[in-house]
Length: 314
Image 1 (cartoon, one colour):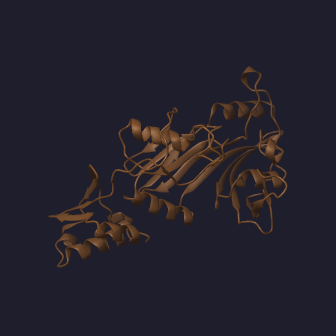
Image 2 (cartoon, rainbow, N blue to C red):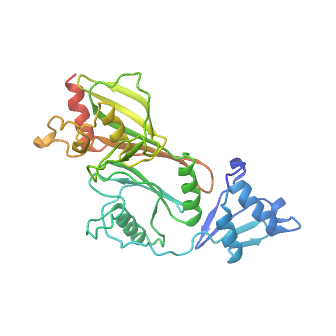
């Protein structure tokens, strides 16, 4: 259920496994206080019916005076082995966690049984190290070599609300990409369906029978041989930006899978060893307060160096 009036949402305090809030005496002094409280949770907070029903069933809603207590923070196992890896936290509270995903790290295990540390493993270790008993629930993913922010839900309310926000396309993700050639300023939207490539298990391709995919170019800066693009996604298909831009004749630098150029030498004689794609920011509404949250993620060093080299060559 979508909240009707976010402005009326009150603050909250966590007390162990309970959230405490003050929804207003007019609600809690109603003839049927629990019914009034449930209406408020659904209409003002936007609590999903599924969670509201469970809290009622399990005595997870308590009313006392002008205060309401909700059992929103029960202890949960992470669901994945905690494996330490340095983690850069971009935003965190009792509902949400946003962390930077480095290049070369998958968001979650791929089922092959390998021992590589994923972002989910690192988040589980972060929860363990900081004394938090949360299940690891990522809301979206990034390709293994793409850097940028990844959003996690830390309780059931956050997961349900943020999953629905993703479905409604209310979570904004902005990317920076450095691509081959000069992209025409008239190219603003790429609306082409994406499907699997029958001849290459790891690739995707433009396919009339594929899933709908829409990429928007919101800003660009052209150099002599390349263009810096800022992009927003209306959909989140696997390799979407890489497939769309390659199909338009502008593959990403370093993206060997989709025909991207290797690019100039960086410091130490190295070259970019992954696609030049970075999630610059992630914006969403807080699951409880409705407040607009934006987590910015500064560019990684390899893309900063690539930009400097390409700018200098124009």
